[in-house]
Amino acid sequence: MDAVRKDLFVLRILNVICSIDPSGGGVIEAARSFSSELMRRGHRVDFVCLDDPKTASLFDGSHQVHALGPGGSGYRYNGSLSSWVVAHKGEYDVAILHSLWNHASIGGRAGLVAAGIPYLYFTHGMLDIYFNSVQPVKKWAKQLFWLALQNRVLADAHAVLFTTHAEQEASRFTFFGGRPYRSEIVPLGIEGEPVSPSSSLADFDDLRQLVSRPYLLFLSRIHPKKGIDLLIEGFARYADRLQGYDLVVAGPDPSGIRTELMQRVDPIVSARIHWTGMVTGARKWALLRHSSAFILPSHQENFGIAVAEAAACGIPILTTNKVNIHATISENGAGVVADDTAAGLARLLDCFAALSQAERTTMGQAARKCFMNEFSIEAATDRLEHLLIGAARQTEAHITG
Image (cartoon, rainbow, N blue to C red; front, side, top):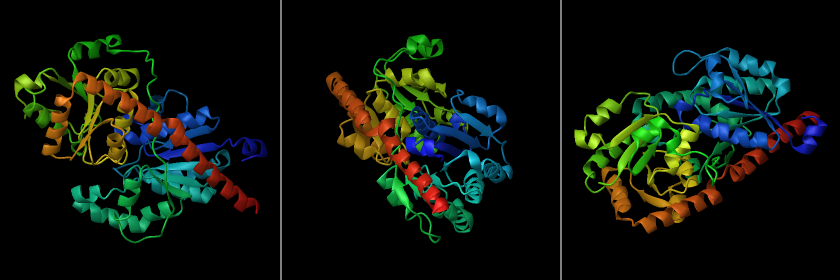
């Protein structure tokens, strides 16, 4: 940092991430939200990713994106990443590495260490012990990878970032061995929909035609981890109890499991289940805002960005105790929490059906208040900014000392 920028606490920040494609889940959504707020505070924030260069257009132009090209296999190896970071070392004061088990973290760490750029490391829930139970074969492959390469990425970080204390605690038991690392809590923040929204379902012909009745909304990837099978089967069983409501399922279906799920549902009930595909921007906020409740029966969420987005819109939340912000939701009266089982899903739907309109309104108001107090991007970025400045200053002191 030069003297002017140090006095103003203005940083040049590089995000190193595998992909900026929003269909990949919450990693890029979290990175984008933080970066937008950091830029509003005057910092410069760029991205380098392992995407095809044409995917840079997925961003709206507010960030500089360096797409180096996709690597092969799920690991996404691209040998140019570390050399690119070294070549641009004079342009950045500090970096943020995102996620594990891909070359963005391994190659990114190698380049940053060689360039002398300090970095923070967001794990984005990928150290959750849950994955060991559902992927027993991968567990041992990851253990070897942890000892050989992955652990050093955490050990060399200025700080490893977890979004909740529950995620931080669970990570201690996932793998054994390796060097110790410093960990910090940085909750995710959401750029919430404004109180006076500018769009509604009526602005989108496809959504208006699709949704004509009150509905429960599932907004996430169509993936078994999200409990989508529990939801579809549970909604079918409770269709009579929920006679006045449809179910809207919004999100990408990367594995193509929609057809299999719908084969389990009676045709009469299936007419009340609407699939929108992936929704973003104003279309996403319109769907959230006009829903009667948000439902996410997930088996694992290190945070739960979509839950916080629903809270921002002031709608009741129905979710499980495997979403790591579940205690915040229940303690604030923002929704109902149950087990991630068929019985738990039944409890969520039972509780929703039993609520009066006045109780739903009160719960929605509590959700909005919960968002303002717990999940706003401003409060979360305060913590991240503090750590970024600390990392950059520590390295500068080491160089000049």
